[in-house]
Image (cartoon, rainbow, N blue to C red; front, side):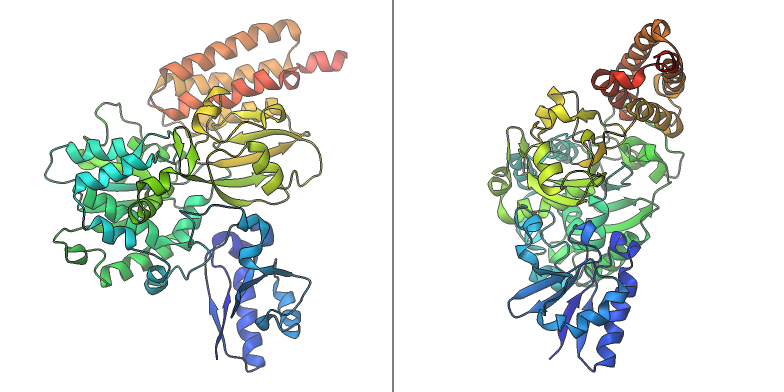
Length: 519
C-alpha cells in the first residue's frame, strides 16, 4: 500500500531546499523498494521548521523538520514512514502547539491539501460556499458579506460589503472583479501562501463576488516576483474551467465568469487600487483622483470590485458557514480572523491566523518566541514599510483596527517585523522617507517632493547639534503633516507614520552627530 509523504512546494520552503528534499525522499523510496507517493503541498507557515515533511499515517499526519537532503537517509533508517522516532520528529502535526492554538478559517486547507488537485479541494470543503451562493440572489450574497463584518484585509480595512453593494447598485453593461495580488509590503507573505497552497479558494471567492455584483470577468493582478504562485493559479484556473466552475455557464447557473492572471508592473505604487487599474489597462501605474470610486467607475471605466487575496479568500467560508459564524470571531468592529505574518528578528517566524483580540505581546512572544538574537525587543513595525514603529511599552495593545488607530498604528496587511535593541530608529525613519521617494508615482507634490525633502531633513538632524535639531524636527513634523493631509493616496499619506512614531518613541536616536561627539 502506498504511503503518502508531503513535502511543501511553497516558495519559502523551496528557498530552503524543499525540492532537493522531495527528490531525496523519492530516490530513497526507490532504493528501498518502498511505495511512496510524494505530494507537494503548501507550507503550514512554520517557517523556522521548513522544509517540514509530513507522513500520512492511520492516526493522522506526523511531522519532521527542518529536513535537509542529508537527513533523508537517517529518516528512512528511523522508519519515519511509520512515524519512527528521529531527532527531527515533531510528533502529530495537528498537536504542534504553535498550530493547535490558531483559528484557521481562511488558511484551513493551506498545507493540508494538494493545491493542484480540485478533488482534494472539494474533499476538504471546497466550493461549498459557491454552491450556497448559487441558490442566492446577488443582493443576498452581498448582505451576507455585510453581516459577517468582513473588512478589507489589504490595508485600509474598508467594509467589504459596502464596496460590493456599491458595485451591485451601479448600472453598467459590464462589471469586473479584480484581485490585488501585488503583495509588496515588507514582512508579508499571506497572499503568496494562499495562492501557492490553496489557489482554488481565491478562485471560488472571486467567482462568488462575480455572481454577487453581476461581473462576468475577473483579473488577478499578480506580483511579478511570484512565479510559483502564477503556476499554481494557472493550473487551478484550468482545472476549474474544465469542471465548469469557470466559464460561460458557471455550474449550470446560466451566468458567466471567466478569470485570468495578469503580471504586475513591479512597482510598489501599483498596490494602490487605482494605480493598479491604470497598470492593468496598460498604462503607467499612477494614482487616479477619487471620486469616482472604482466600484462605480473602475477598470475600463466600468464598475469594479477590487479586493486583496485574503479578503476574497475569506468569502467562501462566510457563504458556506454563514455570516454569524464568521462574525462570532473577533471583537468590536474587527470581526473574523486575520493572518498575521511574523518576520524580522524572531526565533519562530511564520504565519499565525487568529481572531482579532489577541495582544501584540502574545503574538511576538508566545508565537514568535522573542528575538532570535536574544537581545531585548525594542520595536515592532506592523503594517508594512508605512506602518508605525510600536515600542515595547505598547506590546499589550490588542490586535484590533480601532485599538491600533488609538496608538497611531495600523494593521494593514498583517505584516509584523520585529527589531531588537541594536536597531537605529533614526535610520529606520530615514528609510521610510527614502522608500516613499523611490516608490512614489510622482503625481502629487506632497508625496513626490515631501519625501525627498524629508530624507534631507532627517540627514540634517542626525548630523547636527541640539540647537539645529529643534528647528529641523519642527520642520520635519510640519512636512509630515503636509504629506498626511495633502497626498493623493496612502503612500504619501502614510509614509509619515513610521517617521513620527520613531521621533515620538525613540527621540534619543535622533541626537545629532555633533552632540554625540561632544559627549
